[in-house]
Image 1: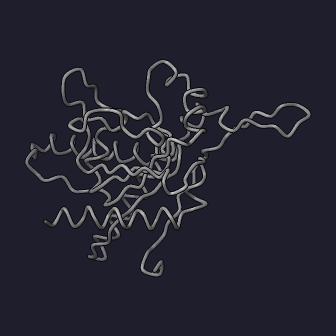
Image 2: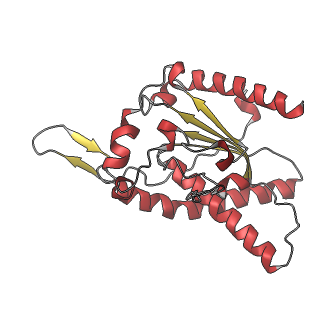
Length: 232
């Protein structure tokens, strides 16, 4: 049960600015999406501090607690950005100390990406011909596993993701939380699991929060099957 878990919430300014039509109740959430991208990039600094604090407490208590991080929509940019920066700093430190053979310590055990509003090439490793590295390609090295929940029925990610962010209008990238990664498997982290949540009745951008009990059950089923394969 939940009594076995320590749950910590992390809040950030992820919904700043809404465009209202004068004289009506009509609003366009996400009209300031680009501003919130900048907020996400700023918020990762505080998340890094929190994750480091949690890991240090584990060491002080001499306990091996699993650390799982979950995020929804643009919150995934905060999480992946934090893990990317932390892993980059670890690599730089090891190179500085000429300690390249040291096994990298995992920062978190599980990362749950729910309807991620980041580019679908964000986790690409850049292996293979004409393959470029994704924006958060190092993040996968900081986690034991990354579970990406997708839904092609997510209209918000289908339309608003590229409409409100000029950066993504310039290329063919779509949202990772809608299409999943679109590349050869050899170009993806081996610890990345992609779960299509559409069959679970997840059709809207907030449905995962409304039907979390269905998602959690499916998640446990998928993890159980994959963990069994790992031990075979």
